[in-house]
Image 1 (cartoon, rainbow, N blue to C red):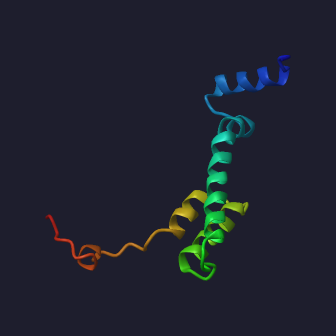
Image 2: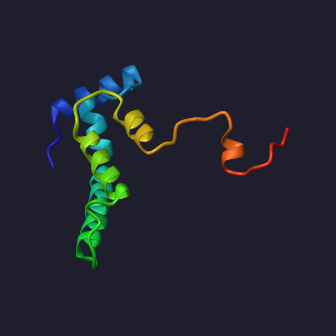
Length: 103
């Protein structure tokens, strides 16, 4: 395989700056992200093939909203995704979940 001059330039930029450019991040992350997307697709296929209809289930709808969020070009997708699946903070969470205060 012939070595590409552009690859040398990209690698040198990374070594000098200590940070990767977008292409380097894509190259590093591609296979792992592809595998995760495949796992999600397989899970959705299993839901679709199973008896019953979960299209109106709140959890399924939440998953769809999460996937839509990931497809957006808006910044901070990870934070917004986490917030989508998180509960709001309440000072009285220990009472709500019937946990004793350890203070």
